[in-house]
Length: 383
View 1: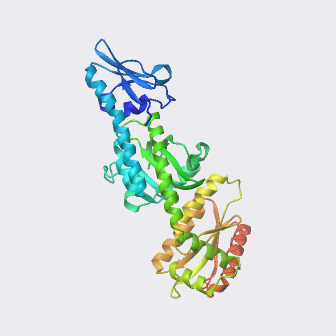
View 2 (view 1 turned 90 degrees about the vertical axis):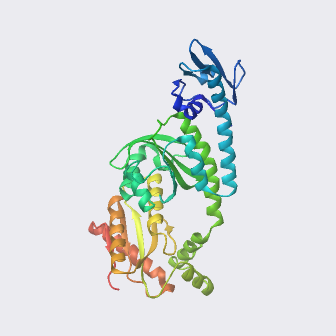
View 3 (view 1 turned 45 degrees about the vertical axis):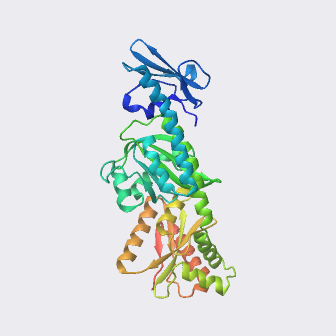
């Protein structure tokens, strides 16, 4: 594994080296030597200090008042350490174990790490920190297993100029909110041009720097492979959405296909279902923001038989269960419409699943009627 001196300094940060390294120093070093050798760090003593030199492009580190032999051994150890880390990543990737990857990576970053799916649901987080040890976002995430609407709204609105939700290269953001007040490294995880998640690293115990960016991008390569392959192996939710799309667009669905969909999507006759149709406010919503909002809807409402995109409208089923659950879901839907500038239309209660397209039309008409009246959301009556 090739390193630069930022990465070496991160491994040896407890020794507090003086860092004089360009932010864009290339990761080309393969070891450390006591004589000049191409692509190796040159370690030498100068008075009471030990220098680790990578040339003009690579910069240098100074270990003040330290023993030459000890510094040399520790720098050589750094290359072994990262080589061992890569072996652990490969092993975890073979097992498709993303949690193990996060566990094995804390010693590299020495900061709180969290892995989210594309809908901002928590998949894994560093076990070294208590709920209340990092920030409010970490506390909420640890307790609710998903990001809060307030944080998501802030990041969508304030992160757009920096391509926050679609950045496929690691970046360090300085976030000033009551939930995240400080620096955070963040990178979207793509596999074959589809986003499957996000890696966040919060600056807490060690200052984030360009070495972390390189290591995070390296780590994301393993995570992308795992998340992408896992998703491709699990096509159940896609089959939900496929049948739901057919029902909404009046395509033919076989009796066997429909019965399987009803069973696997949890369709129960005792429950009341409505078709929900959402549309982004037409006031110049960019593609990245639109995709982010679609992912959030999938995260919060995608468990009722699939979420589909028909032209510029998103549709999903809303289940009326207990009165409290109904109230909670309506509140969440209202929250979404207000925070993310969505127009929402909701059908009457579905009486005939084979005529689901009629209820989709009801949702669309309710949405259009709401636009003419200046309403954000319109709920169909009856039940």
